[in-house]
Each structure stands twice: as C-alpha cells, then as structure tokens.
Image 1 (cartoon, helix red, strand yellow):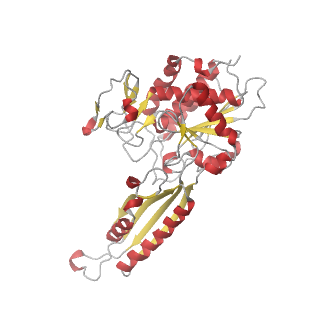
Image 2: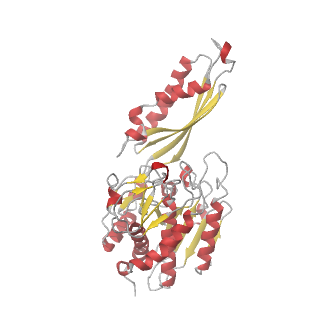
Image 3: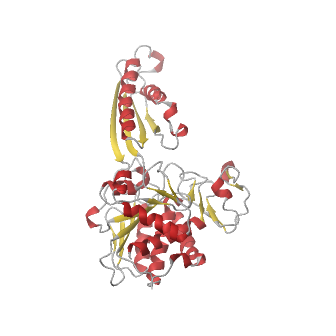
Length: 419
C-alpha cells in the first residue's frame, strides 16, 4: 500500500507541526557575521542537540551531530526500495542577526478574524497592506509580538521536516527510498556550508524548506558576493586639524554615498540586482564598510565589483593621503543551470504540487539558501515554501495552513521518488 498523501487529515499534521515550531522559536539561535568559526554562536548548539535527540527518540539509529553543529540523520528505505534514488531535506537552524532574535514570544491565533493586529512598539500586521495575511481570514496564524523576529526563517522548515519524519516513521505504509535529514547552522550569514561534511552525504538530490508563502518554488537565486572595504586615514585633534586630518569615517560615508541609489535593495525587485551596505564601523584613523552585491546575471555582478574599485579611487582623490582597499569574497552562485540539467528534480516537484492540488509557481529567490551552495557542490537542491512571511523583521508571521502544505509536499516527494 502507498498512502495518498492528499488524504492525510490536516489536524494530524497540525498536531505534529505547531507545538514543535513554538518550541523551536523560543530557543534563541541568531548567527553572528562578526564571529569566527562554525557555528558562529554557541546558542545554535541548543537547537541542534534538541533536534538530534528528537530524531533518536523517533527511533532513528543513524543520527549524527558533527563537531561543527550539523545534524544529519538517515531514514532507511522501505524494504524493496533500497535502490531508489536517495533524497534529502534540508533547513537551517539559525535566525537572522538583523533583527532582535532572543526571547521570542510567538503568538498563536487559532482563527484569525481578518482585522489588523497591534504589536509592540507601534508596529502592526495589517491585511489592507499584506495580501497574504488577508487570505488567512478564518485560518490559524502565528506571529511575533513585535519585540523580536519570529524565526519562521527557518524554524518553520525545521518543524516541517521533523513533522514529516515523525509521520513517515509512524506510518510505514508510505513506501519510500533512502532519506536524509540535514540541519545546518549559519545560513543567514552566508556560511551555512562552511564546514559541511559533503563526503558523508548520500543523497543525489535535496530540497530545502526555506521559502515563503505557500505555492512558491525557487530554482534560481542570486549570484552573491561580500565586499569588505577598509579606509585608512590620519588622526589629529579636530581643533588643529586644518590640512592634517584625514577622517576615515568621512571617507567611508562618502564611499557609501557613491553607491547608486537606483541599484539599492529598496529600488530593486524582480530580476534587478543591487549593492547593499550592511555596516560601517571605525574612527578617524581606520574605518570599515561591509556590503553585499547581488544579481542573477554574473556580468552585472562583475560590473558592480569593478565599480567598487572605481569608487575607492575617486574617494582617495578627494582625500589625498588616504588609503582604501576593497576585498571581495564569493558567497554563492545562481543554481539555475545545474538544477535545469536534472529536469526530473523539478518535474517531481511540480508533480507533487499537482497531486496535492496546491497552486504553485516558480519564482527566483531574491537571496539564497544553503541549497544554492549545495547545488554548486553537485547535489541539485531547489527550494520549497514554508508558509512564512515578512522574514528578518519584527512583523514576521506564519500561516499554519502553509506549514501543513509544506509538510504534505515533503511526504509526496518522498512517495514519488520512492516509486
């Protein structure tokens, strides 16, 4: 027997999903772009240890928590399906450091009334300006209280994978091939696979659960670079500074102001890329600027990287004697071509949604996932929705129905790949 996934009762999945998610978001796990090592914060270990133990408690004997905080577990194939292609499901455990991520107090609304929701500090969730929220009238949602982010990015994905694993292990009539579960640290700072033990992964294809509203699939992402710009000036008392002071802070500000405003995140959407300054630090003698560059077209990335050097020379000309160095580091690349080279990966994704009656569309990720890097390393890994909205903000919220649909997607993909 091979259970039709569409016939699984929503309540049975909701009971597996919601308590897990509420538990996970209360465990602080922000990553830190300024820290060295993997994981970048010790708090990520708390969630990793909890997940590893939960997987063992489900009866899995092949559960590994690596020295760098990766959780890898295997579910053996149904007898007779051992030679089916091995597939993996991946989510990240950290949350963005760009909004408060500690002491999260999630609010479960079991039947949303369709009205604006007041949050802390004068914030609100308003269906008049949020179509996804408006569509949830009468449905269950989970939102932040406004003091912190919620952590649906990506603890919703973690909960969905864990719930699917429990359902599979307690319903052996769903026939499947070899399965892997992978949880990673530090995705939000572009370092999710920095110490990843690729050699131990057996899956030939993976799916990340790290997307937004229900029905969104992503098989294309930005090409991503980080730029670190260092400014060297000369300090002297401001009262006697004429002709002597070279203020590195001013140099950094002038450089930042040269970044084209029409190529900023707030001016770009669709397939348009951008420069985005992330942080300026320093004083009169030395200052630093961190920024990211994103675009789907590698030629546009190359153009922007060249422009950074031109901006540096222009600012040095305005501050004779000052020095500016630009160091760039690749973070991840567009995964489109490598995924399209394996058409069955997206064919099964589309088939799963059609079988479940989930309206879907493919959209480019205006960001990236660990799947971007994993695809580059040879394992095609498109991205599946989680039901989350307004990620990285204090107005983040999650549709429970989206979580249920994502969990069904996992189960249906498991079934299709195991045929």
